[in-house]
Length: 362
Image 1 (cartoon, one colour):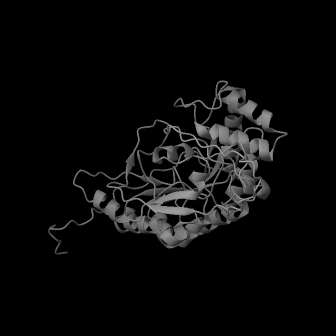
Image 2: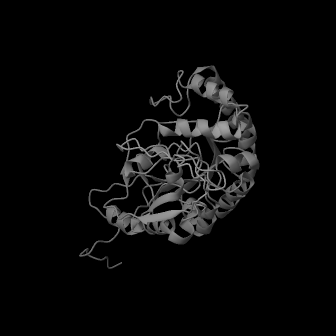
Image 3: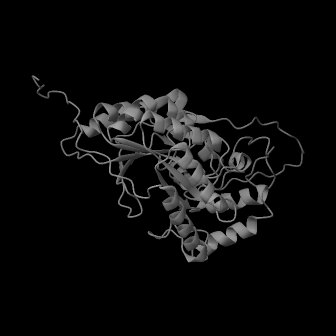
């Protein structure tokens, strides 16, 4: 049952979810708080289930000008993510839909089933110029719902057909379903994949990212992608100060042994509502370390839970952040893991045919 006087649910009701409840939506004028009516009845509400709604956007390619990123365009097949990583920096984006960044983000998903068809139309525009499209930079394209929706599969089929470069980031082992496409594109210099490994500990992973495949399983996915011909970067991210940062070297080593040729890391980011959700999660699962973890987080962000300033938000500042950066540099060099990845090809791009186009005779 719900916990009186809060917007949190009991552990039984939110089984398999990371967030404890639904923080208020910052754009809404009203708030909802459960209060005991005095009857002391357990209403027996069912365990939360995932709900999927459909969105049909006019465009699927999103542009950005962030100096922190090495791409200027991306595609998100889904809004919200059933993986439910408690630290996910994308949670606040659910507020723009009138939904909470808490449990709503994990259970009320928005799918874009027409994305492949819309993408093909965008690629066919006369003004379009090919650059790497990143997929998985906000929410995971290989979260469980993709098994039935197959939106990511459709996007890859379009990109493959028109020889368009793509960079994929995921924690989902469902990506192995698409080895046929990613392997061929990888061998052609048109695709690369980043696999995120936050911790090698299965228990910590289950608590922190409850519906993500186990770390050992993700390492096997790296191996399979590399064997298929697709280059992989192991991503030690996010690194959580005082909780997972001691695993940095071990994660990079495991990634190298699995076949990764490049590596990266990102320091924990707690924008907007994510900070409160993460603090609640720490208090529930690791109360003995909560103060130390948050203290270190603030040390790396100028005394705040989060500093959004470009150039700092990904890597932090201060002694701890500098030491982490040095450890990453030394370990990646020792293992031969590249920190800068060769550019994907754009010269192979084939413009999709439009209605009325003159067909080639050859």
